Image (tube, rainbow, N blue to C red; front, side, top):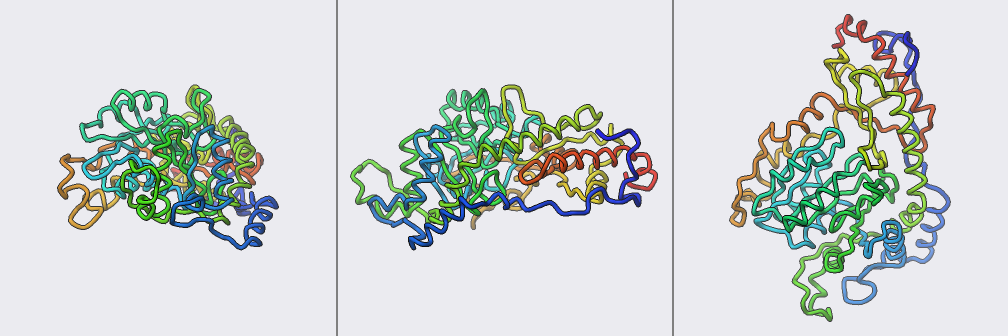
Length: 434
């Protein structure tokens, strides 16, 4: 941390510590991406997909090259590309045969698609609370949420940290459930030396523009299960039009969508795959430095991987104890922004706070909650997941600084701003900033 007598904070009239904006994350694009994209454009075939039986049912050369690279990286038998991670999440649920009357347990502290993918196939999300140390599903809370209607657990590896995937897989296996991983934020993280995304029956990955690697919009499902893989391929590409022509007559009927990834997006992603480990290594170096700078501050809990885990630091979460710090989260966020370091107060609303869940109506006639097939009485009452709600309302801030092209100097400057704010807490309180 900086010296014990930091300069006067900007919120009290001092000069802001930083006045220049942070560079765009998209500067990780380079000549490799340009070369492959131009190759696709010169070829003229911007999509290799066709909605009929044959080789083109599985996409073009760049889609296939991307899927091969992903299989190689994760060591999985199959990778199926999609136009988004949301599409990939929906495909996993649909491929498992989950539908009306079924429940899927997931985290309320995630991007909304972790749960809406369940609703997309007319099943019902059930929310378990999270572990405040990892921000991922609390196994005991998951176990309490299991009912006779439960078909799957959708674990979310949040901010780059693995969920308790070993224990969740053991629980899923013992109860005859699918374990899915929403691994959109945590590619490259490990638990017990095993990559996130490879613990469940299937996992969804994201290539959205702000992830560790990206192609603008895109996603994948990875799995070792040939049946799940085939069903994901059918769901991705208008599966209902080819079923009568498939040689395997035992494949069940499938309503398909157009969830296909373009050759241009796939070309960018192929180049990006080679950068995944180097970019994560940068995130880890920056994050570990920030952890070292924030450690030891009474009332501040920096991001520390759980034992046996490695972190890929999609975002950097910091927990505050407002009582020990003598300042509210709102004041700290306001003061850091004044220093030139915008941070998020909390992450996202608990998913079950959204109107769709409060009203229990995802579709007309309040489906899938009350329209015939579902016999449960799922609760979305406020207070359902107290750890999640406290983090959202009071104690968590999120920093998006530990990534390329930011530098160690940027991280150290952020820590200096943090020290400047906390070093003047009495003055801030005296000025009415509580």
